[in-house]
Length: 172
Image 1 (cartoon, rainbow, N blue to C red):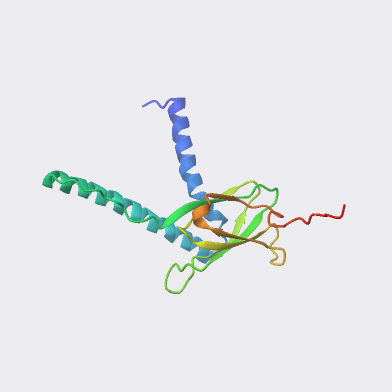
Image 2: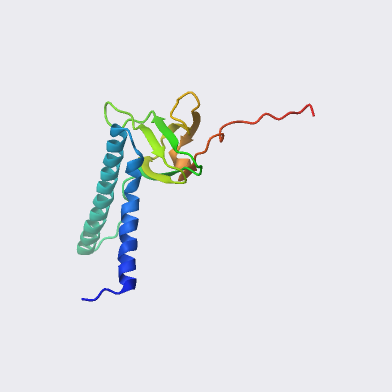
């Protein structure tokens, strides 16, 4: 069997895409946050496969009984959000919410470190309010804070000074 260069390039590209889609977990340095992100991905995958299976089963039942109904999958619980670091420094991020993941823990994400000019793709609950604390230093004293609702964002570019309101000198 001979593998052509074009076929090898396609395979390499597909492997790179698959590996890069899983790479965001490496930016989570808090063990609980990394595990929570893995749990969210498993939970979301289970919901997607469950909805697909239910749709296929419904199609067979409707065909066998010769009835027509509409199938609406359950509401989406999670969505992808992309945190982008456009700077030349590592950005340190903590995301706090009032949404519970389980009976004892909030769906917070702590100690996310996004390298220069990189992005972190993560799953977050739909319609959750997050306080995002970020800085290009590890010290908490200079953290900036953004309040977001996950419904309103797909991507968020974080850079120092973005929350600082500049004073206008009206006496000039």
